[in-house]
Amino acid sequence: MANCETCQYAYIDEMTGEALCDLDLDEDEIERLAQHQSKECPFYKDGDEYKTVRHQM
Image (cartoon, rainbow, N blue to C red):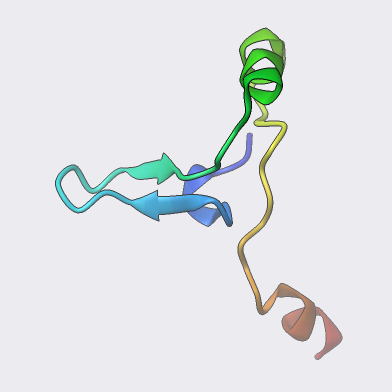
């Protein structure tokens, strides 16, 4: 399962300290997410900007 804290669309809420999604979804995408059967988020995008650089080393 993808970790929300590493997602490009996540931010940490200052009040709760939890990772929250900041993805702007339209109605069709919200419906797709609601009907998604897997535990994996279909919109997850790795936010690690240095992943490629570390791979090349």
